[in-house]
Image (cartoon, rainbow, N blue to C red; front, top):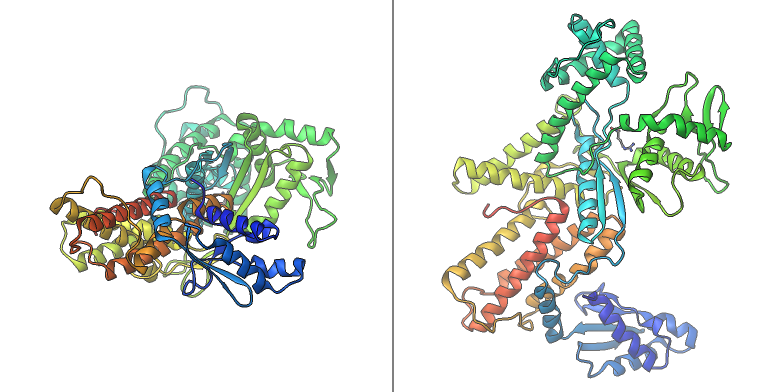
Length: 589
Ligand code: ARG
């Protein structure tokens, strides 16, 4: 279906043209004075300059032109030259009936030319527990991916594991101290390595911080860890077998964690998967004359004349020949291009890495790793702060582990739910988990991604205000009305959405009608917060309508059935929206 804003614009543009002015002045926008009108056109103000006459004259002509147009209840010119529009309730009802006929997509067209879009998000580091910093990447990336899928694009999510750095050497070193007898450390060993990992996930999680702590105090220990990293990266068999175990144990744990967040990835590639591509890539950069030695290191210049701030060269290899985070990201582009040839690669990463990605993207373009047909996009997100405005920490001031954060919020939610009424323990726990996830995700996604935000558990878990639980509460309320109606009444055959009977009903209908426009722009701008704003307005409009209208008490069965149809449509719009945001609604709460 065409977007309602476009349909309205077309009519006004035509009227503008019929009045003797360029149709471009007929563009319509949402009203910024909802007390006066629903849509407005300010084109006469601009047209007045071109045609050298009073803007009101133009607006007035266009308003007269629109008289009798069935799409509008009213089209009024107001001084100094605005055109205020109200939609005809019959037209609006008809638009909603068309939406309703398309249960799956509510009239939101799929894109005509599906793109292949690879999205790099999550970015957890192996063997290090997930912390809140990884939460934002997972939540935002998952939603951007789902919005793209909904619009019909081929979205490929890649977790891009951090599985290549010093942390691997640290773990190996610590393991060696603790269990030197393990066969992985015997360089003369040439047999098969055991299938069972020599540690559990909890041991692994304890080993890393222990090793990391020691390396900060003990220089020799750190050297040993660096040596182990080097040997691992240069093919030492026993260490590679250990890496396999670390990866395996870690990845199953990560999958469980992401599952709890309703987040999943198409690809479980890591930094280590890029390593085989490095030598050829570096050779080519040298051969093509892009990479040169500067102070011992191999670099590619990426500064541009128009830079306001200095953009340092992109370092490809350190003076000892070791590769860097850069090198891995560049080599990752190599296999992504080779295997998927994406139209776009989106990186959902902390915005503090923006300069770094500027370097990587420029280097990839300059050296031809990514052609002009592939868009490289950095979607940087801000910091999640605590109530004190500083990066979110545990009460003791340490880094907050994601698992603890989640279980804390689940517990909080469980208390709230069981405070309100009595539920079975099991159902209460299940509901709490669903609602808690909405609190976290909506709390995050309702902010523009690039902004910092305050993670305020009390606010996020509230059933009132601009929160996930409020949205779910609204859906549950609609569900319960629908259930009652089903149990008590029979929907008449001719039932349909009717022209609004009240202002609050019309306001709800107007909100619903924005659905396809919202999805489209949320995709184009990679902006889940637009979907949040839509469902918040929609939920408010519904609750207002609900408080002003006797739905179950309505005597006229056709009017009542029309309400029910409208409620079903509102529910559907809310459900599709929360699905692309990455959470769901319970049956009751
Ligand atoms: N593992 C990194 C971190 O924890 C994030 C990875 C982001 N993605 C990328 N392609 N560099 O900071």
